Length: 131
Image (cartoon, rainbow, N blue to C red; front, side):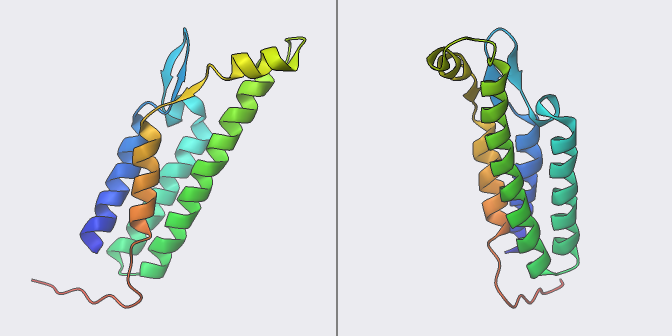
């Protein structure tokens, strides 16, 4: 199980550098371009999960996995609200919704969420053998 969780950590870190949002004319944005503080929070939570994984604390790894999923959901909601707010100067709500719809989510989110869900794959009692 540790190897699967380690792969989950790698997926979360790699996903943060991949395109997460596509904005026409501007291009693709990763976590750092979306918001520096959210990117740092993602990396700190991943480091906490790595600490729990290295020190054989499955409850800690699961907790950080849930926190990462919460952070990703918060980020998706923030992207939607920010795109609606960005076009608030338009006079009609239908226009705002249409222009806010041009902001598209990219494939990096698949790696982010799959990595966080892999962190949740733990047994209650884990015994690790040393070779």
